[in-house]
Amino acid sequence: MKIDPKLDLVLERTIDVPRDLVWLAWTTPEHLSKWFTPAPWSVARCELDVRPGGIFSTTMRSPEGQEFPNVGCYLEVVPKERLVFTDALLPGYRPAAAPFMTAIIEMEDAGTGTLYRATALHHDEAGRKKHEEMGFAEGWGKALDQLVALVKTL
Image (cartoon, rainbow, N blue to C red):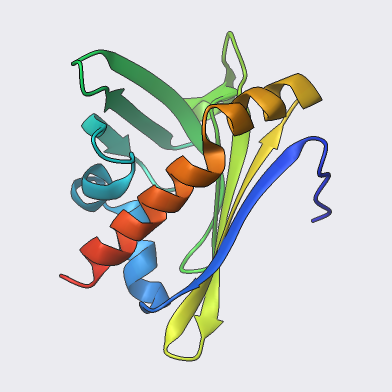
């Protein structure tokens, strides 16, 4: 896939946990709920049906208690290698009212760890810029640190 720096954001890092546990953290609601939002934010609700067309739904809770639901669907699932989901489509590929982004999560073995790549695709430069200004690098990076910490306890 070709990355367009005007439209896409990428976080890539080699992490010191095995790929099968990274996969488990991404595909199990009780695990994803523990790391998916950067603290002090939290996940109030999570529903995953990890198959193309299946639901990817999280409700993020701010430190002040405000809730922000996000419902989308999986587009592609390659076990232990790749997850693609979007909030542009609802489960069953039903179009959503306000598309935001498509996320691509890729993982591959890197010695005893995992090369982890998260890509956020946007419709236009304004959407990419807004996501970047909302703290993409910091937020997704902190969430990844939380994923690694959780996986080390499994």
